[in-house]
Amino acid sequence: MIDLLPPMFSGRAGQVITLLQLLVAATSYSNETNADTRAQYSKFSKANSTKKSSETKQIVTPTWPSKLAMIVIYTPAMIASISLLLLGSYIEKSSHLMLLQNMNIPSPSMAAYLCAIHFLKRVAEVIFLHKYSGRTERGVPIMISVYYTLVSVLVAFGGNTSDDASVFAAYAEDRTRLLVGISVFALGVLGNFYH
Image (cartoon, rainbow, N blue to C red; front, side):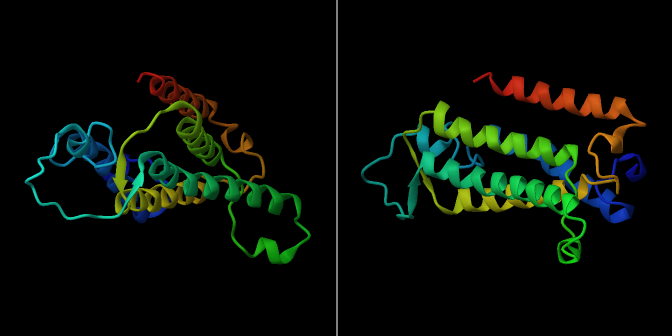
C-alpha cells in the first residue's frame, strides 16, 4: 500500500511523511465538524456561537482580534514561500557565487509557486475581503502558523524533484501531471470562493 503513495521526498521517509499528511488531512474534517473539538478561531466555534453565563467562571487567556489572528496564521507561511522562491531564483542566476550555492536553497518548483500563490491569496482575503468581529486565544493562531510555515518550507524543498533550472522543464516528459496539478489547484481556488 505504501508504495502506491507519491513521495514528496525520496525513499521510505518521503512515503511515511506523505502518508502522515494524508492521515492528518483525512481526520481534520471530523474535528472541525464537531462543536467540542472545533478550533476556537473558527467563526463556527462553540466559543463564538454560545451565550456565556455571567455565573460561569472562566479562565481569562490572552486574546487577539480575529483579523490579527488570521494575519498571524497566514503571513509567516506567505513570507517563507515567497522568500524561498526569490532566493532560489537568485541563486540560479548567480551561479558564480559559490557561497550561495552551498546554502542548499531549492530551485523554484511549480509546487512552491502554487504554495506562495495560495498564502498570498489568503493574506489578501484577510486584509480586503473578510470581516472579523470576534477574538481568538493567542496560542491557536501561533500553532497553526508554525504548521503552515513548516508545510510551505517542506513544499519548497520537496517539490523540487529535478536539478533542471526550469520549473516547466522538470515536467516536460509528464505534462499530464503538471496539468492535473494546476487544474486541481485552480478548482480549489474556485471552490474557496463559495462562502
